[in-house]
Structures are given as structure tokens and as C-alpha cells.
Length: 374
Length: 134
Ligand SMILES: [Fe+2]
Image (cartoon, rainbow over all chains, first blue to last red):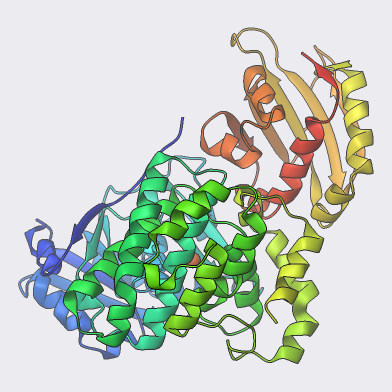
């Protein structure tokens, strides 16, 4: 028994207007503090219709912790939303998943969200994701990541019941995404596709999503970087990122994520930048285990970036789009990095990516990866 | 060759876990005992139990719980049918995938197990190295 889980996806221009068809009254919008200052929440509300009731919870920061996510939960329960919308990047959408669960079941804590038991969600409301970045894949996943309140650890909880019912991929939500974030989030998506395709848990559905997502992203990303307002190419990268999300949430990621999460726990670095930093080394290490698969992915890259192997193609591609390929080019302090390698290695060992990565590794090998990107 | 499960099999397994450098590393901070529950494929008859007390990268004690004996209370129980244990030992499925696909049931904190997937994998890899007959 295995599954392919996915939200119902609404994509393309004017997708937001789909929300106006929902026969529901009370809409909760969960978003982050930065987005709350932009025109996007207004655009979303306008698409849903002014005759509805809205509550906006914009208390989410870059790396939300439990306290932050649940700071308004009693007001939210009072409002009693029928639709919970997570609008934003991964943090806002993941936070919306937790709020959705805890609004439905007042007796739960975030840690009670587990795939092992039926939670019984969806009785009061539905969950909708409106991503405003193209990369995290959170709109398609049934996991939620949040920081610990005390410990500097990232917690991941998961349940098929926190998979959004709808994912709305409207290019208008990403047209103003700044270049740096466009690159980082797309790099995250590329890493999702590559890691999902090699994972021990891969399956025909995740394979199909991974291949197509890579084609869409690499076929349009450089065009988006050149002309950020190009709706066609933005749309391709947006859909591609969501497909990469479906790929990995149905087959898991690998060592680049294990290492990237560990790096992200100790340094302030964008998630996509962190995982992308390790991806070429990880692919090189895995090559023997999944050669045919990597060669197939390599052929998907546009010819002008393609080298003789996928790891080299990735490096050349990252250089071409201006993505960091070393600790130094990622802007991190090399001395501090060297001092924290042992600690980060321990953290990386705790990740499930170690289990699902195509080639087996041990602590010594993980430590080497940290050295390879200096 | 040791029959799975039996006293002989369990003591051989404990010996091999304690010899494993990678388990020592991956389970370095793990604390907690676990009960492997091997249910008969037919669904009829009593399950077999294997008790393991794992602490900081070593197996402090282990035993095969004989039929008719009351199994000890443990922090974790990992429960599956014999046929699925065989699949696990052959490397056809990994321990976490076993839970998500319904072949195994975990009683205890999934959150904790998810932080020790490498240790869980080494435990299973070690199982497959014990010369076993079923
Ligand atoms: Fe990621």
C-alpha cells in the first residue's frame, strides 16, 4: 500500500477568483507580517468578494514558533472560520495548517498532529493554500515545520489531514516576488525534484511530478529572472514548484535537505539557498546508486546549461542564475561555520533525509559534505 | 542459524548491535526501551515479543519473551505481522515506511522516532545480518 496525495489545484491567471465560488461565509487569512503590508491580502479579499466576513491573522514571522502561531487561536476560534487560507511562503502556509487543526480540535497541541491516528479534521472548515513564492511546495504537502519555543530545533509534524483541500496557483501572487527570493525558492523546488526522484520512497507518481517540474522550472526560470513580470514564465515556475512539492511530499527528500536544515538551524540563511548549496555534492555522492535516473534528469535541463553529469549541470546552472555554490558565496562567516560543523553534523543525522537518500551515509560522510562546500 | 524469534536469535542480535559502530553513533543520544511485536500472519494465535533496552548507543539488555509470559511495558512498541518482519529484514521496506504504509504500527512518540531514523535503519540493517531461519 502506498499513496499519492495532492490537493485540488487551481492554476493560471485569475485562479484566485475560484474562491468566490465557495459557498462559505467566514474566511480566515493566515499570513506573515511582511505580506500584510503589501497589496496581496487586499487582492485576495477582493477576489473572494466583499460580501464575506474576513479575519486576518498576520502574526507569522520568518521562522514561526509555536507561541507565535497560536498567539491568536482563541480569537480565531471565536471567529469560527469556515475557510482557513494560508497565504504566503512556507511559514505562513505551514502555520495555517496548524491553526486549521487546532481550531477544529481545541484539545490538541501541534505535537498531536501525527500520521498514525485519525484526527477528525475538516468538520468546521476547509484549508486552502495560496502560495506567494514558487518553491516551498508547502501548498502540496501534509507536513508543517515550526521552530521550538525554547530549543533551536525545527519540529516537523505531519498528517494527511493537514493537506490543503485546494492549492491556488495564481501567477499574480508571485509577479512581485523579489529576484533573490525567486532564485532561492526556485532552487528549493529544483532540490525537491532531484531528491524526490532519487529517494528510496520514490514511486511512479512522484517520478512524473519530479520530471515535469524540473522541465517547467529550468525552462522558464532564467526568463523570469530577466523579466520578473512575464506572466507565462512566472506561471510555469509556479506550477513547476508546486509539482516538485507533490513529488517530494509523496516520496521524501534526501541528504541535501538533511544538511540544509542543519545549516539553517545554526545560520540565518534562506532555506532554498541552504539546500542548494549541498545539492551538487550530494548528487555526486549518490551518482553510483541512481545513475540512470540522474542521467535522465540531466537531459531535462536546457542544452545551454547541460554538462556531462547532473552534479556538474547543477553547479553550472546555479552559477548561471546567481545561486550560491559555496559557504563564502552564500555570505556566511567561514570561521564560525568551521566551528559549528560537528554540531550541524549531529543535527543532520537526525533527519529522515538520511534514511530516504539513495546512497547510504554515516556521520563521517555527512561531516565531509559540510567541508566540501567551504 | 537462529530461529526468528528465539532466545538464541535475540542474544545474537544484541551482540551484533553492540558491535556496530554505526549504531553506537546514530543512537548516541537515544534513551528508551522498545518491544518488537511479531504477530502471526494468520491473525490467529499469540504474538511473539522481543524486548530491547537501548540506551546511548548500546543495547543494555534484551530478551525473548516466552509464549505465555506477560510482555513488559515499554516506551515504544513496533508491531507487525511475521510476513512484514520478513520484508523488513530483506530490506524491501524501511522501518518508517513500514509505519506509513500500514505494515507496521508504532505505539509511542512518532516525533521521537523521526529524529532517530538513522538509528532505526541501522537496527534493521543489523537484523538482516543475523543468520536467521523462519
Ligand atoms: Fe525544501
